[in-house]
Length: 296
Image: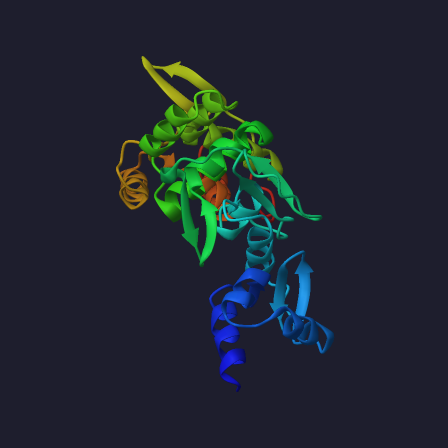
């Protein structure tokens, strides 16, 4: 390979196969050669001033890298695409969204642009792509998400990226006028409420009798209670256990000791197993036999 082409290939390899016109010039590729490489297919234009080297992959990382490069030096991948990249949201890869400095005027077709001054503590790189940090992403998305979806996103950010309430509070303090701060605070501590809502929905889907919720039983406030069966189930929070592993271990220990308890993971990640346990408990106390198993 020609040394010039090798330099270009090495640079593009660090950017998921993408390279800018400025980077080509810095590598020693003059404008005439750029035009020839475009003409013969060696470079394929994706945005103004941004090229894919050869046949571009449509893998999301390459698409997002191209969008960031096209949006200027202050650009950071943000919002839903970042959540997808970080594994916090699943499904189909969202169209690119980037946050740029308020003073920047660059726009590109196919890229949703947000303007904001990002604090140095709110930016990082992930897979070599400039991005906002998870806590800033959650604050940006709070107004666009339902309370339940936001709580799930907070949970995933904690599990996958160790995003803590202290990080959330620091981000809010740096952005006191951002909408959704109160909603985000509530969502980050909402694992019990979220589990309760999801638990009731799980019982409905499987045709099981519903409990009374948040009532006093013999002087204790309990989460879920079937008075006619004398059955109580608690939905426990991981918030005060330090780590999710410690929390899940505590829930398992309680069940082994005949204190019936379920966690967020039991409800949302192991729903089929959980509904089988509840159905067996209800049947053992005289409720109708459990219905056939359904997909959770």
